[in-house]
Amino acid sequence: MPEMSFSSRAVVLLSGGMDSCVCAALAVRDFNAAAVHVSYGQRTEDRERRAFNSICDRLGIRDRLIVRNDALRAIGGSALTDPTIPVPESQAIGHDIPVTYVPFRNAHFLSVAVSWAEVLGAGKVYIGAVEQDSSGYPDCRPEYYRAFNEVVKTGTKDGRIQIVTPLIGMRKFEIVRLGLELGAPFDLTWSCYTKEDRACGVCDSCVLRLRAFREAGTADPISYEEAISKL
Image (cartoon, helix red, strand yellow):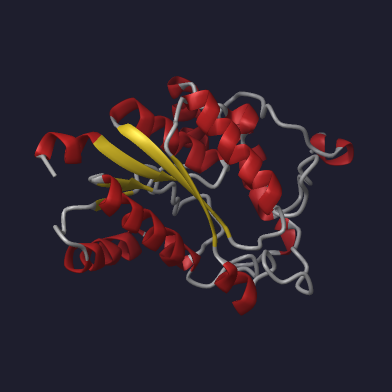
């Protein structure tokens, strides 16, 4: 693969949420971007898939890969994949890793993205992992991605694919402001853990998102349940 071709392509993991949307906008700005979406039996998988396709349409991403991972649903152990485990409201989440953590999920996602990057000849894999202002998932820490890059280096043909996490050290409100500068289509994104019509506004993901938009001094363009939207 010629160096120019290798360096001009990137794969972005696009869940359909606000962080991955900003990541996709960054990838489109700097590279010929392709987007991959992994459905894994999560509660809102249909809504997230629609968000993925809509964001790709708006950003002009033509190369898309949608993959279904049945392993994570079969393994369970998370409120996102096991319907018998209720999704807690944000205020019910303490300092421990919450039940919405999907065990080692990002390793599954990254494996798909890196495999596709090898086929496409892409030199970068973008993922919108965030450490600050997050739910505290262990696979969103910088050291995790440093270690995973070593795995990619030793486990791929050329060893040149790099996983990049441009948002990992940013506060959520900073991500919102960056997205606005980039023209990221926040109106098409979906972050709620539980609902697919109007966001619940009380799960950890909704609360973190609402707080980010408030601190950024702008309105969140998606709809929330009426009783919650006044919080």
